[in-house]
Image (tube, rainbow, N blue to C red; front, side, top):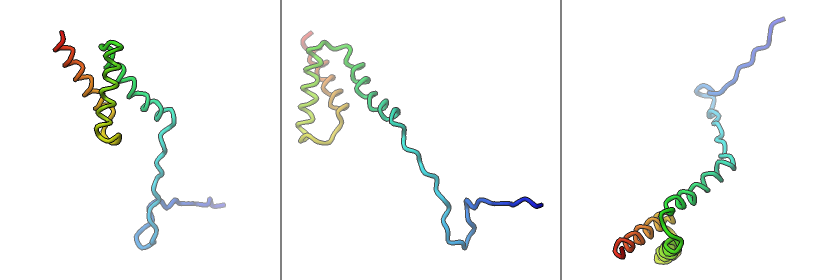
Length: 96
């Protein structure tokens, strides 16, 4: 008895009117998303290890003020934080 043959039509030929099937992209796993979101605060904390607690509070207030100056929207929290760190370092150098 002959075996039955089947063929997959992944790319139909011209003139069939059908578009090739597109592969669906998988959404990232929740753990991967959470890990990438946690990376930003850890990176900022690592940058801030050289500052005292009072200096970190001053950096927080200064970075927040930069955000408020923009009308409380837009911009980058990381850029504000780094700008505030640079300002605190400048003030520390002037005082020291």
